[in-house]
Image (cartoon, rainbow, N blue to C red; front, side, top):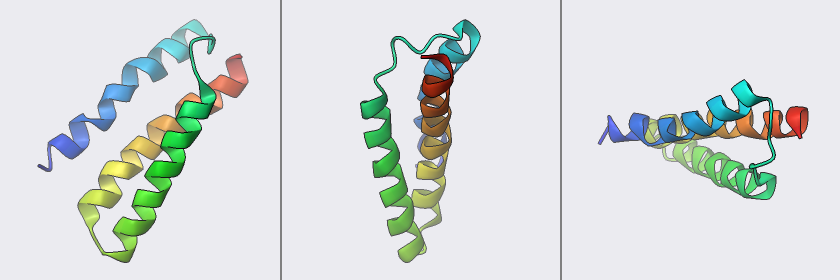
Length: 77
């Protein structure tokens, strides 16, 4: 299960890479990414409250990649 918690968030990397390389955020729906960001932040809060390192790690990776997409949206829109 541990390896899955690393692999799944990495599936966002192609979107991050494509947006960064092309300097174009036209295909990004920022409201969806903000909703994902809020969800990941909520799960991190829950994971911290339950002292569950796997939930915190998994969602921290998501939060990092989602933040990159959101920042690039505002840079390249």
